[in-house]
Length: 350
Image (tube, rainbow, N blue to C red):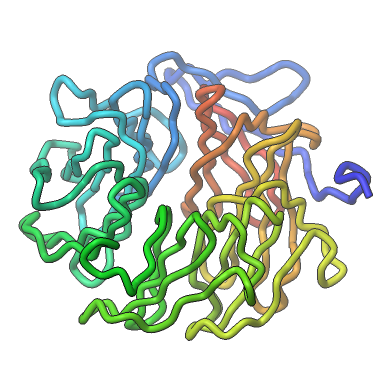
């Protein structure tokens, strides 16, 4: 069945116009906005901190900061702070951490965006950090090129340890790209086809989930919600649901549970309350799917086939802020705001 023959939930939304910020009412009521001052250049990741949105611009070597409504506050550029193609961002406890492909972690103050410190050096083994998670007073860095997880003290930036494939081959890290926590267990997605669970305190292997049983071919993202792990796989167009200890519950495809998921090479997945949100970046109409964890049913999906459409172009990052979902698309340098209840577009910022 063609994806576009499915029923798509999309309500026409009105736009709130912010005076003096370049947000303009679009033609034919389409809720879009534009402002050249945002400095978007391949925005790839987004996080929330101090009631603000923080957006990493891969090509711009910068971070764009907006208020909760998307109004521009500042653009932090590499001339003032040590960015080098920032590719991931995370926030907690009044701080923001930015991972750069140049092999460094930059810590910023969430209040004013000022530089706190830059973490780098051979002992951190940072070569291509692609994901960040702040948990238990530590910053956990997923490094794809190093096949490692680097743990950094969030208080002072000191190195806690590096768990690498070369030092601990039993963990089975193989092109790791994502990380989440379920209780005391850290779960790492290995893009080569497995998921590793290890004890966050000792670093000891807890369990390894492999393709043979879990239908994993090229897993991309992982989240923990509803006492379940949710793992996306871009090769099989599926979402694997397991218990918090890794026992298989089901592998969800586009036709599972009589629901319409719209998966097309699903990648990033995030958790918020009792829901998970999944990005399907490629294809003629990329989309975001909302799934209720209690039923594993697709609640809605928003794609470029909807009217008004969000004009996603290979979206790579999303976050929840209050009653809205924010999505960044690096290929057309845009930020889309969606209603969390329906998925309908509120506005677009470029």
